[in-house]
Image 1 (cartoon, rainbow, N blue to C red):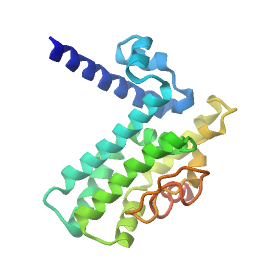
Image 2 (cartoon, rainbow, N blue to C red):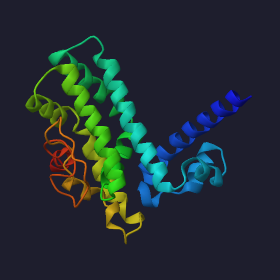
Image 3 (tube, rainbow, N blue to C red):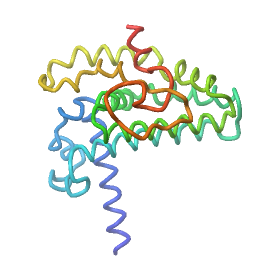
Image 4 (cartoon, helix red, strand yellow):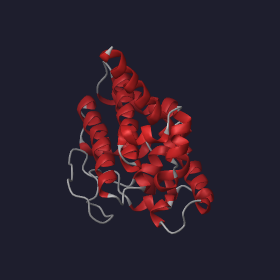
Length: 223
């Protein structure tokens, strides 16, 4: 009986994360409604808070899962491969499976947009750090090549339309909180030295995240 109850709680938790990703992708951290998330998940709103405590903790859990699933997708694609072959496989799967999922991609953009919050910054930094560390290890290639991989394969033109879409939908959000502006993310450098992790979050600058070149700067300059 205890095992059944525990499994049920885990299933419900995943259902809440599924619903939350849709809502956060559409409305961002501050615009999202926990009532709507609960409705999508088929549970009560108080149960959402029982599982996650606060809306921000739910957002962090959603972001962490999104980046973890990206890592798992990379691992499946690169299995048994090394070097350029591994990079090619991971780049292809990112475009074919991950970029084609608009909800996932918009959720990632919302996560970057929320990086003014140190706690969210930590989640994003660690998640992307795990991606970079894995790509370095499985490919066996140097930092310059790995940085070029992330810059060229993980900033496809498909992202541009989502940034533009976010710009046009922004007025419907809470205007007093400028952290919701999707284009603030262009100042967040998502890549610097791939193997390095910076453990402090201050103002948005080159030390915020551990990798070279700003992914979203690359995306937005293509608009």
